[in-house]
Image (tube, rainbow, N blue to C red):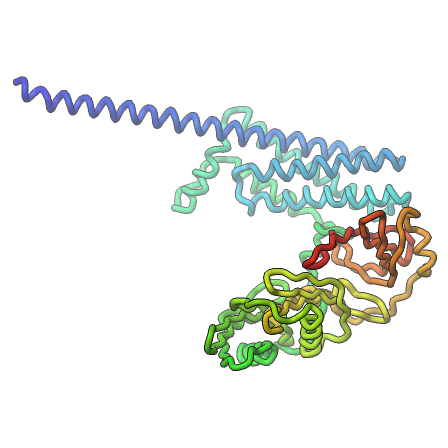
Length: 453
């Protein structure tokens, strides 16, 4: 009897232990769920507060008239919209359902920044700009209305944010999606998409998504044509046998064939990947993988080889702008040149190995996106007039006309002034039409090259 009691006792003990373990697991899970839900709710209520602030500030922006007040209001719009984006990103909601809302917040912030710059110059806000601002205010009103619906559901205890990730995982396995917030955010996303696109000179403008490559010319080529083009443009190492094959078609703004090139020779093989555009067979990108030996050629010789390769590409007149040396490779950045003017949007980068002078890399996507036949470049002010708009604290070392890209993907004719202040060097770009400062960059020099920031 005594021995028969022991197994029963052990069984009961194990059962109690499992029950205790299960309870502890339940408590730990509930604690984690509560903690997660509190974090998600805090992010949601912060988002709600920021979007309410954006709506109120946009309303004020529609009625304010003074330059200082306008600048202060739009600066607050920018700040609140950027913070709202961060809060939105912390919610456990699919990016597909928050994408349009996130884009709206980005556009609000960036457009407010555009209006800050206009207020700073004293320029009057145009009717078109006011119409955009009213449109943004209407969207902010709709967004807040929809977010308040989510708030009411959360406040009533009818939904928990921590349930969303679990429901998403269940939906992939065929189970119905439980939390109503997902439907709420789907509704918000749908509402935000009903508004017309916002087009302005900024990086989040809708027209940037529709921008197509301007430099692609010629008919479509076949995969075989792309392979032959890549082999013809490859800078070959002496004594190396090369073979190539197309491994795929890269989708995007520039559709391109991906060509894999293998080079065999005694002492080490070589691999390269070339992207050749489907339209016209233009080189988009070259990356060569091989071991780089001890540098044996100078930067001057490397530049000469990069310029010779540019001639091989047939891209027209280019001008060296910057160079940098790193890990045995020299990278040269060239910009287009037209009518005696540097065209910075038409950029091409060439990488040259310093052990044997082989071109091991190139990047031509900027050039292919921007290059086109431009109208005559006619500045409205002279170089000397532009110089008069510079800070008197600067000492000008050199100057030249230059076309620079704007944040919105457009182009602006400017005068570039390379200037110094104490030990610091700057590039100041003065708008050749208005005399306004279009951009200021600081140059940082090192033994390896120059960086512009």
